[in-house]
Length: 232
Length: 226
Image (cartoon, rainbow over all chains, first blue to last red; front, top):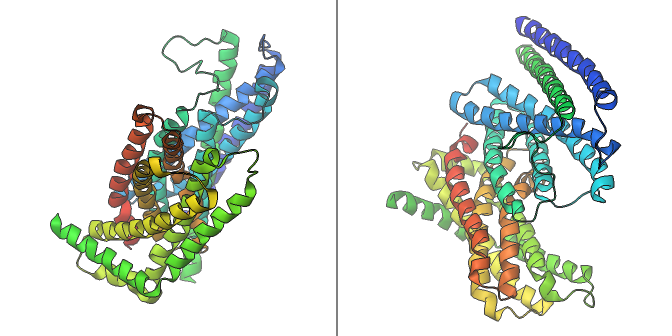
């Protein structure tokens, strides 16, 4: 029963972190709507930026960590790395879904179109498909060791695919707003907007940590139950 | 290294002989490619779009779908009667096994493409004569990369339920860079553009081949070893 107790503790910790993050998210809404100036040219539509960019950041963080955990898994064969990769992929797909829905909602009034085959949109869409495939593969395999090995291979190949998709779609002219925070010169965002963005990014990252912890604890619990089932 | 190559050729030879004796998968894949071309013909309005404008995308979508059907076969034949276990017990390095399967798949997909191309010229009435050597070259360059990834995923997919569905879901995202590159180069070849306009795409295709053939050879043991 010790491993299922450990699982409950991990899930409880994840739940506390997630609830804290959700309270923080309510704060982000207030901060973004009430205390951040309205962008002069885009108007109220720009507010979605404070959800879109942090969820994109979390999705990319999640997928990068899946790639790294996959490579480490094939090397160290530690089941914890596999559980983490699975948890991160699931949460990453959820954030990617938020990114891919908030993007078009903003794009319709600003670009005049829901979707465009721009470099970054295409890249993130294929990342989303790639990780949906990753999760589908996991779901269709039963043996935990085999599932861990095969999904680690997909994780590694996926990590290497990203620069290729980026290069191949970048050769089409890009319409996406250029980087405004993480770029060589100083951030070109007004300080209030930058503050809201950074707070929101921190809250989203906390939410990512909370959800991954919960999902990780759930995986531990599932394994404990499977083992108990095997023993009986 | 010649030893590895000899073993790889032996594996590939075994696959090709087995396929030539039954011919079921090859014939089905070729018929499938022909059907895709026929369907495409009904999907276009000949008065609105000239065949040559549509040619690169029709050709490459057909190649991609036919390759998918062809790749599904690679490891399903090994699953029956524990043939894969026999191969894994045989005294040969995993890299030779992967290279052999890759060569057999390339021969298989290459044959399907070689039959599709004349059918395409026939159905769509496009004059490819001037661009033909270039099209054959870019087809080879693009095919090596995605067939290499496809070989890995085919070995993976046979271990899952819904193997026929799992392969396309996993492989299609990996087909995107080679397909975009190949379509762009084919379009420029048909338009008679100079080589300098294709160089960037050709470099991307070559880089993709080098990276993914190397990487797939490295991760292949993790896919087949218990």
